[in-house]
Length: 133
Image (cartoon, rainbow, N blue to C red; front, side, top):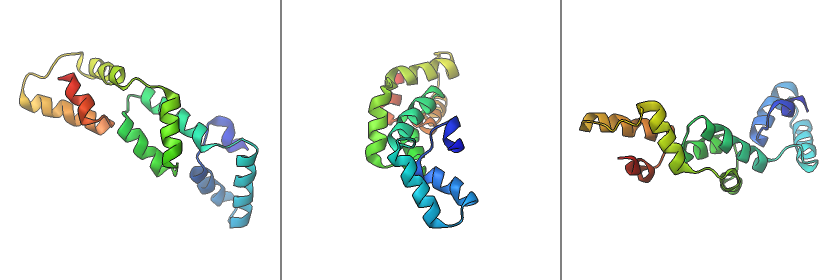
């Protein structure tokens, strides 16, 4: 219960954390099932909160989706979370452009390549990146 008091966790994260305390699989599975049935744990809710949190840190949809997959969240919950979060990715990439580069367009091909690499690393799609330049 204390694990969920600070923030949402995916089932996979909770299972990993509970494994340290309870080595028996049956106890862990029973606890996870109880938390899910009581509505205390939800991968959909975790996904929605995670989308908002990571987008607020300036990360794009491709990276956030990959991180959620690594945390064991189903694709349907990932898609639902993205829709519920309601993030404007066009505005997001422009804010990141202003923050990182003060809105100054690249002056050379090498500089443009550096800008593109930065936004790709952050998880923005090629289409969104192309709209910047």
